[in-house]
Length: 327
Ligand code: SAH
Ligand code: AVI
Image 1: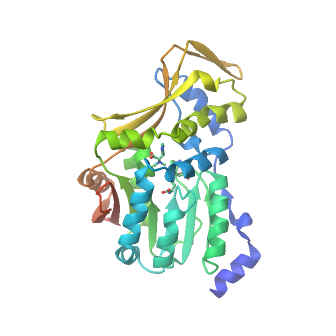
Image 2: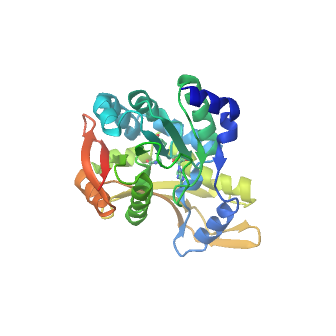
Image 3: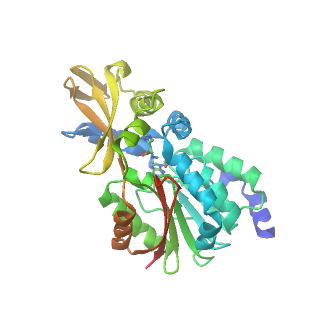
């Protein structure tokens, strides 16, 4: 406690927020993605300030069951989840966003250090400031970073048991190959005796999935289209937002929701000295959201060096939280 207070006096939150996101990668990734035969953009670029706000609105939609289901299962099993994580652990959260579910975990675990990691500075700043008010005793070390690359986490090597929290089924936005690489990287990061808590959306009736990604109010469509608006704003491109449409469907053989932005006409888009031609009906693949059965995910985690120790489900069996131990 005394150590934390001293730390806070010397280094208020805005100072310890470290940024390790390369400045030019957005432009490079957009040009590379739009140059592919199947045009594609990495979903991590959804989350500028507006995208993060739109995602928070999605979480509150009646059709978008994952947030409510994961919150309900976390509340219902918080004592067991807290025991699994271990009191006083170092809690590292990837893709922490507004750190909504984290609050429950922080209360139960009382971590020695909480390290929220997010690519969205705005979400991270807002969440960290709120957590600082709500948990004045908590040592928060926020990292503005990209978890698709190895990250240096700012906690002393031997300070305690490391537990990585990765809720929200953000792991579903990685392909199974990327998820495997991510889990391997995390396994190395938590070390022997470490653990992971991963929220994973489950396979289910395609109609339920379809509704969750095609909400009646069109918030998901706005979230998807904001990616093009962001490219216009930050990179000076000239996407005509009225000439693209949100399209999301469940690809059953691959077990994933795919989101696309479909060009409504033949058109050309300018980005600096680059020109990208679109046929009518051609799409940009903007996101995968992979769904796993509980045994499928346990097998994936097993191949990456984790032992699946616990699986918690919500009452309706829509969402899972996996407790993984470093094997
Ligand atoms: N964990 C929260 C938010 C999930 S939304 C929840 O369960 O509700 C996904 C979050 O991951 C967003 O806050 C987004 O900014 C962040 N994110 C997505 N890709 C990322 C990446 N490559 N590196 C770091 N953060 C990322
Ligand atoms: C953050 N991620 C897990 C969300 C999902 O469901 O795949 C992002 C999202 N995309 C559309 N709606 C929500």
